[in-house]
Length: 217
Length: 141
Image (tube, rainbow over all chains, first blue to last red; front, top):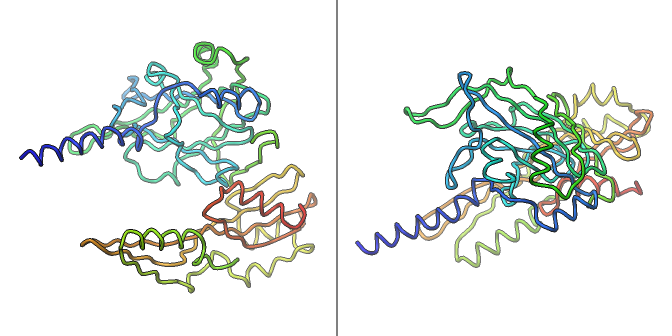
């Protein structure tokens, strides 16, 4: 009995440690090293917001707990990935704070050049067929706001248990909330200069990639 | 374009399997086909063919790389299964495939004429960006 209990406790402990590392993105500000990369112009902080409504009511996009996977996975394609969509690394924080996460704000550290974003709601399998949005990170810019992806959605359930949401892709729009983006930037990245707005756009066809200038290591 | 059965990833798997005291079996699949055959690729000639011909023969590329020299590179990508691997031991067994990332890369000059066309294999130990940079760096680009 004791042995079973020990096994159970160690399994739960292991799941608690590995769960967040495996499936969930975390909150936090960039490290000093990453700040230096931004200040040197080789990376930019790209601010994005994701909002969702179900039956006309707001629904928190990143609402899952620390052990379960997030409601939505993000994938990026760019020069480094050869255009392939690769899930955003979970090792680095993407939410400036838990409050920002509740509101759907994320930040990514990206090299200058074109990037392609795909979102895959929890439970949907095929990232390859997901719609794409393209945004361009200009050179020598510290903070870029690429827009707010607003997703009218339907609630998904499995055996009557809510499992997430599924967007109506033809009704998904990119909104410009640059005033709010500026407030987020001032609050979480006060050392950095003004926010440049470059809204993402829906993309179809071959992905066009460009290598970042040689200063962008 | 060398077969990758003896590359570092295969050797690493064999080493891990040996260290764990497991038994492994690797079955090479030399007959696995490419997205484009050598015959198809040879219908496009550097210095003679142009972008329209390439689009007609191979279709739209998966990715277009716009280089700093304002020359486009069409990238057609696929995965090629090189071998099947089976590992057994401790009352359990597992299997999987060893695949490599392949690409047909076509560099055009500013007049949209084919400057270079090659099939290339990405190493498992480099990023796609490094692979593309390495490919363009060859031949004095």
